[in-house]
Image (tube, rainbow, N blue to C red; front, side):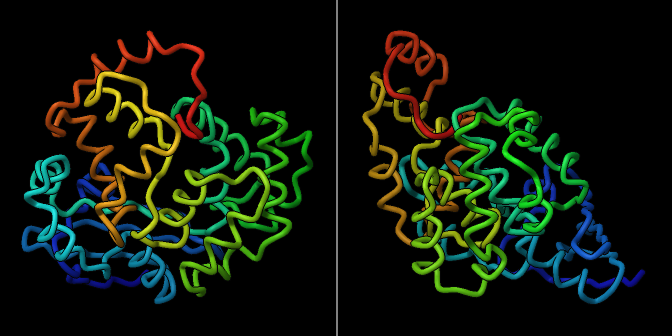
Amino acid sequence: MITATVVPAGPYSLRLTARSATWQARLPGGRSASAVQVDDGRVVIRASDEAAVEQARFLLALDEDTSEFHRRFSADPLLGPSTRALRGLRPLRKATVAHAALRAVAGQLVQAGKARAIERAVIRACGVDPPTQHALASLSAAELVSCGLAASRAATLARLVRELDLESLREQETSVALARLARVRGVGPWSVGVIALRGLGRYDVGLVGDLGLVKLLAALRGRWPEPGETAVLLEPYGEWQGLASVFLLAGLKRRLVPGADLDRARSVRAGSAGRAAPESM
């Protein structure tokens, strides 16, 4: 094992990012890494080798300076309180783009708890953690369905891992990578956003259609939003739409978004039964 001490670029909180004071992960190739943040803000990484240190830096988003995001939106009427209270939060990334793709497909139209259970079942079935594209591609549609995926989403995951070189997307321009993902049948804007955030490490792609953002709009407006309104909500945040999505969702859970009462959103939703469901729940 080796130890590396990293000074994060810009404001950074491991506790907020990892939802814990410590972080550890299995990495491709049998590597592993763990991290803690010390009192002066530096992050100490213990890893199996230098390659694992570099992977840990990417997964923890240590080198992505978000100072401009906080500067620009600290006074934003909706986002400002969350950026101030959750300063240093960054979305954790997955060790493989294939894992991010699995999360994106497993999370379509199901509650978060069920989505995570499906994700864990698929990982057990493919026998590799973190899951690789090859391991996921080796699973049949029937095996994916047995893990809890609906047949249509099992087909979507199969197309993703068999039609694209997912890992190479990290090296491509955002517009090119997103276009390739969007051409895969069954992959909608929310799934593209999840893969961009969690797999590619991009902050400029919002989680359009996320149920949490739909609830936020319902709470603010007193009605269930029309399809596409979450895209309008995120548009003012420009190249920071992905990070804005993360902060709005985290802020909603902590009651940091002014005027967004989740009880009101539940009441609005109950009165809107039968409307088209968003891609993610």
